[in-house]
Every structure is written in structure tokens, then in C-alpha cells.
View (cartoon, rainbow, N blue to C red):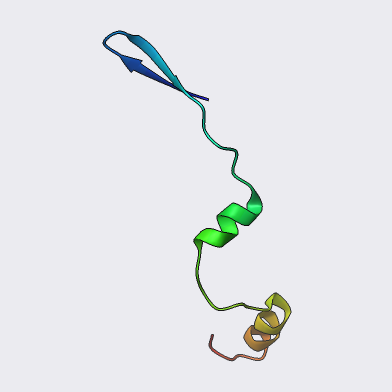
Length: 47
């Protein structure tokens, strides 16, 4: 819930719950593999 003060009193808005899938869906980008990225960094490769 969000509370917002107005001239006539308080306004209450109900917001949709955000899931992890919703947050991940906001970002478009290439799929990455954390293990492979870590190996590359440890070998001195630039990402």
C-alpha cells in the first residue's frame, strides 16, 4: 500500500506485489553463466 497526502485527506493506492521473475524480466541482455565469467576473470581475460 502507498499513502499519499492530498488536499482532501489521504489517498491510498494498492500496488501489485513484485516477484523476482518480474524484476528479471525488466532487464534485457545476454544470458550469462556466473561460473564461466568467474573462470575468465581468474585467468585474466577481460569481460
